Length: 218
Image (tube, rainbow, N blue to C red; front, side):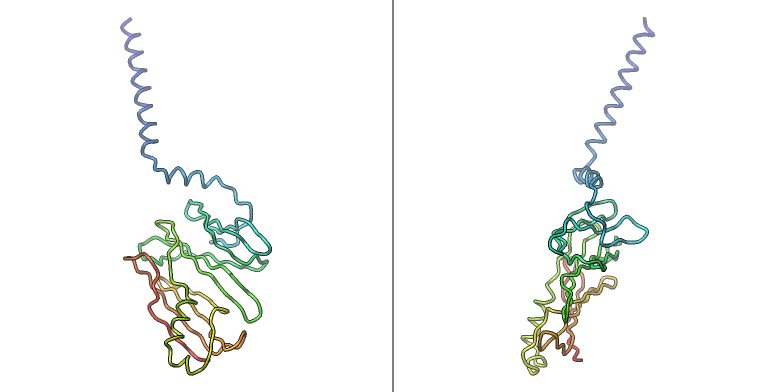
């Protein structure tokens, strides 16, 4: 009888300890971890438009409407996040995906280049940088607005006469430095020079700030 009682007590303890471990695991799991697990189960409806070779990091369009990709899903280091980005849907590559530590925190960030417009005399890129730690998009001032503000106070450009920007916009990312090159035009396709805006990440405000603007005539 004593042996039976001891066996029952031992079995009860094992069950209690096992239940305690399961509860501890559930309690210790954050909501974001649970969401990440669920996000990984999502099967993209379309093929990726950009990938990083040798990794599972990729960019998927959510849907296509009238030649435009509406929304993008970013698979990055085991997470799967949706963004309201738009891009030209083209048979030729209209997107690029890179990994670079723009925030200089030791974790690579997702660098996304998308084609917003492409045609005769027109080429417009969009740049999106997603913080690899917080997985949120890093804000930066629209280069077209920054260029237009510069044109209003530039003596050199005022002497040239009315000029416009916005039909040619191309980005480059090197380390923590981001540059935007904008074509300065006197007519729809007559470009007379480039405006290069240099951005640098400011960790205090967690944004990319325009540090300098340089005009170069052709």
